[in-house]
Image 1 (cartoon, rainbow, N blue to C red):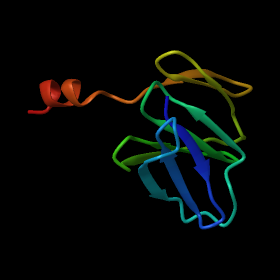
Image 2: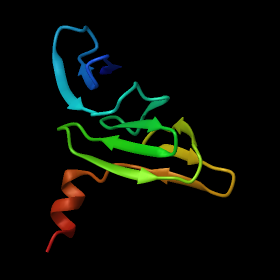
Image 3: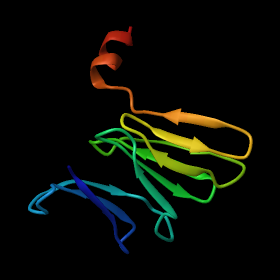
Length: 104
């Protein structure tokens, strides 16, 4: 399984499990490290800075979500559970195959 780290350089690095290869690098442009990081399935990470979540895919693509309060994050087998005082959501990355089928 890949390993991840957030550096002082404001970057997220994903390494192979033997740490021999840097599989991906994502510039966060954040002034500080995230307060939460969980796997979102097998190939995406969910990063939390207060009420802002950023999902980073395997090729550096990302999407942001904003919450009024900092949510709790729980990794699931194929997604991440996001819990606030008013809702529970499941976030998952849409596979490239599903994107190809659903794109007009």
